[in-house]
Length: 381
Image (cartoon, rainbow, N blue to C red):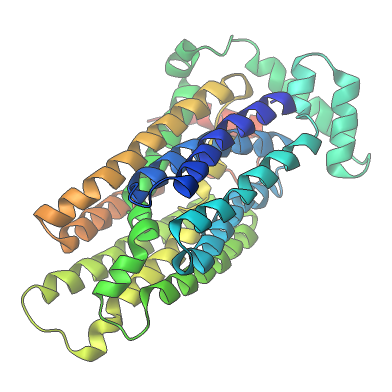
């Protein structure tokens, strides 16, 4: 994955965010924040894909999970920053302040080294060695890692990396199915609803603290739990964290559904008005320790090098459609059936995710990219 391609992707992704920020900053506040959120999310998906690809290639196996999880730590930090000043500013000034972050993002990409996988694939072995030394900080075991990368690329280059290879080669097909299913489960947990409508849901819960302050607390909790995920992902593995995460999301969404369903029929005692806040906090905690980051972490690990770009592109497209589906259907479900039905649907989706992860998702902890491909090839299902 060449840095020039990454820089182009970063620029094109940021153009959507910059254009949206300028449009919000200098046009009528009546412009729907709903459309703004969709534009920014879809523009950001391209950068997420490229970043996952790049970090998956430059990271050593023993810390690859931590490095890839840092993508989500950065994203959650950005959300917390938005939570901290957004409710206190007008749409115009909030949008203009937000313009600073994609500009900094674009400038930081200019200094990154090329991926050793990319350089070796183009027979630039001296440059690949220099890049690897720069990335590792020393010459220790560089030759062994160079040999491992060359072996992986030689095996991958036996096919041309076309869309046909994804469908017909068993390990590529399994990587695609697992990656798509994980990102769909991720979106169908209802995380976008919690992120976008947390303040509204908090206000509906009739608690003493205003929703805008609870969302700040929510953002802090999310960052802490994502950091915990990063610390444990290479020690405990991806599967345990994903299973715990999906179970927790299922239970917390069920709690929210029961609360808002009960609220339709009886007057809930004051002491129970905190249940929605607790449910959202629990959901954010459990989502952050697994489903928030690990689907994209595993996407960067599961695909063979020759089909990684096209495979990750397909997954990101599906993730974008899943995001759009949840975002567009939530207001309709809310109007037609009530908030509790939406939470029950997300709970069922999370429950399905638990079973799928347990039976079909392989462990990739501390394995080289070639070892992961060998394991995918041996899976029978």
